[in-house]
Length: 334
Image (cartoon, rainbow, N blue to C red; front, side, top):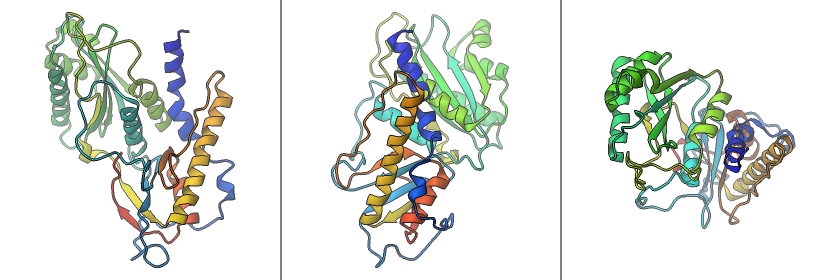
């Protein structure tokens, strides 16, 4: 197997392993405490209503925990507009996986996997048209299912021939005919009957683990595999706009809550989260020959971090270390 193939293979189960390896050795050390109410609203937090400016963000029914610190290395992106997008960076990949991990699995039906490709020798040399085509597909999907709250998490990547290819996770649609997807997409991009029969794929997912595995393998591949976006003449296109995004974000089943912590509570929670991430990496290294666990460290005494963790485990942390923490509905900046 080539180095690129091995790298993609290692990346395939990265998210799945980190997410599904819970805390077999760390959680037992936590003093058992009643779980907080799913929607607690105490009037103040801490012992005297103090606010130390540090928080724990949890997505209800999701699979991650994001600890926000303060000062240098807190993990909060700097303000201001981002520059031009030229590649699918590791930071962009992290935001994509965090968005997926924040989805509420308790009440949401499993999404559909959909792939969309362009005709073999013809696609627009203007990257803005690619995003317009995707928006048109989303609007037609909403018109076909007017009573559904439809949202799409999409990822665009280059094929070996240089054409764009879209990976979609479609939420809110229980069934999608393969023939309809091919016909609609081919009509949008100007394909023929042959293209309509081959331009799309629709798959049903059986579990949330399958969703995360698919996201890690196909949607979470970082740039650098050799393929680049080009026009039909083979000229490289460097500025193609965003490589991933969300359509119908208001319908995406994600609800974040923020627990306000005191600094001593922050350090206790961070110690457990950091230990959990390291333990998961060691477990993956034991199960995957040739894979080396990356060093997981924080950059400052009061800096934050994030890790994949089941919602009930994260609530257990709150109940053990910050039972009096106030909760507010607030979405973090990923």
